Length: 189
Image (cartoon, rainbow, N blue to C red; front, top):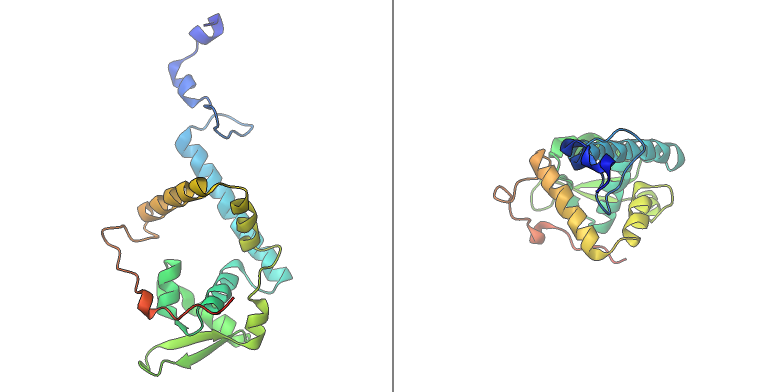
C-alpha cells in the first residue's frame, strides 16, 4: 500500500469505480446518483429522438410505438394497448385520436362489445409499420445487438424493478394476469 492509499478517506474509496464500472468525467456521484444521471440521459435521448422523428417521419416516438403495436396486433383494443404499454387507457386517447385523424389508424366498434373500439392500420399506417433508421426502435435494436442475452435479461430485470418501484408497472403480487386470449393474433411478418 502506498502512502497516498493509506491516507485516503474510506468514504472516498467507496465512491471510486470498481472494475467494469462506467465512469464519466466529473465528480464522483455514487451508485444511486450515477444511475439516476444515466436514466436522465436516456430520458433526454428519448425526448430528443422523438422530436427528430416527428420532423423527419411525421410521428413521435410514442405514436410510432402505437403504430408498431397495432401493426403487430390488428384489431387490438385501447385497453389492451394500455396494458402492453403500462399506461392508463385515457393516456392513449390523444395518441389514438391523432393517429386516426391523420388516417393512419382505423377504428371499428367491437361486434361483441359495442363499448370497445378495435384498432387496425390503414394502408398509409401500414406503410409506416416498418423498421426505420433514426427511430428509438433502431437505436434500441443496435444496442441490443451488441449485448449478450444474459446482460439484456439483467437490464430488463433492473428496469422492471425500477418501473415497479415508481408505480409504472404493477408489482408482481398486484399484477393482473395478462390475458393472452384477449390479444388478437399477431400479423404475419
